Image (cartoon, rainbow, N blue to C red; front, top):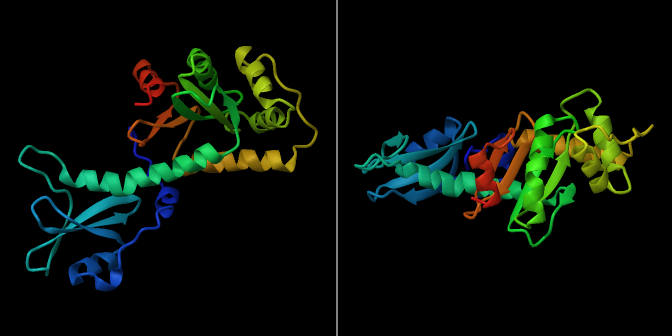
Length: 251
């Protein structure tokens, strides 16, 4: 990931754990100190390693040959390459991101574009977020060219009435058209507010905000996609030209 997404929610989604009954004593002691043991692995030099998680971070531990001591930290080669980072990324960060992506794509939202598009993009947006509007405008040509398909998950974080307008959009007969009218007019064509928000719509917005918080996003737009290596990518705020280029290419 360009920015690692490793919140408590992501970590909790991982179900694979090591058989702690057969742990070497030094590793068991690390477990008692709060490290959750994930799995054993063999280090490049042949030594026994163990992968764990501690305070939302992947950690690697290496058992000494006498099996009486353990060293916690990163292993580097003669060229300065971090050899521990790959297993942490492959076994913890990537699976967690992919599981979160499944939650993102299964969440109901405002879809724009074709299912044949090369890259799927999920965006958390507020009806009054100016950068969300700029991203929407930037995305339109790529949507028409079937390079990307976007799903917008509306939240209410910018203004006190953001949630009300998000609800009005989602409760409309055609939410996609209402959202299009709002964004294409730069916020001038607003939907009429409802006297009472349907419970299902309220729940949808609430879940969107919970999902956004679980991803560690602190602003809108919060943009997500899987790259060609199936690693979850995150962009917070308006993408710069390089980020936009990577997004369109799913890189």
